[in-house]
Length: 334
Image (cartoon, rainbow, N blue to C red; front, top):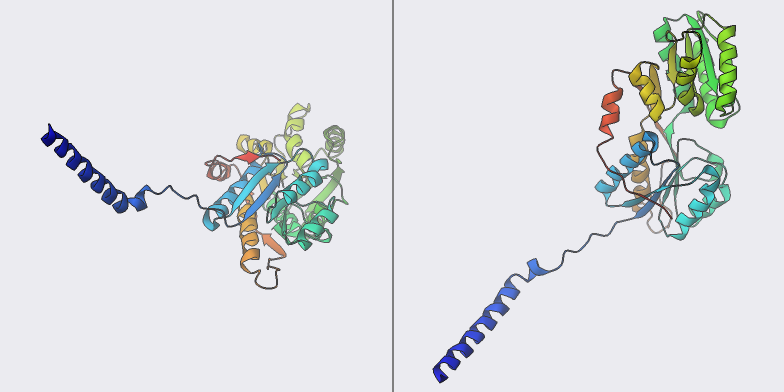
């Protein structure tokens, strides 16, 4: 019996020693995995998480986050009137940079953010007087020029055009309209026979469009230069009594509806900005701000980054759409 107790005691001692050696040998592997903290925290504010337009920007943002180690929160805001509230919430959450659709309704908040060291990147529309740090998007005059060149090529320098805008005085459309008129003037055989201002109202658009079509029965093309017209003209034309399937239609808006119109052959060309690049470059600029901050406490950013226009047609729309539908996005709210 004593012999057995001695063996058990010896076995316990050996087991204890082996355990200590094992723990020391594999201690590095037994440590809990440490989560890598983001280098910087940003926020991207968008009006609609379901629309391809805003999601493609978000995908560019996430690609840049992955490369740089930053973390950008994706936030959908509820209505344009509430943007200032969401903006203030972002500041209170201690983010280090904000990516938001260009607006002139909260200049005071934007200036305060920038002055306190939180850079603000505008996309889609630019309002320099807002105090924003950087704008990324297409040059509106260049967009109008490209659209005019698309029309000229299709119409062989001859034909009548109807242009639809929200308002001739709208900041984002003034330069596009000017470019369209300037370029069309280079082709004596081409003419803009009418400008419809729909004021962002579909019912007003319907009435004015029908009237213009009756006044211009020999119309060759329509260019939609604002979102309501871009989303509505295709359906309105199908519902009118006359057959308008021969009209060449160009839109400057990339939306779920205009994508379907292109796929179905109801629209011919979307002239648009590279949305993925907007998101990618926005994060790149915000990270660059902090990389160059130094002792001065003020980082460096490009004030304006002009992007090239893309032309999407039935031949390449599927490739473009599929390219940016491979990632699941996680959206948040304050």
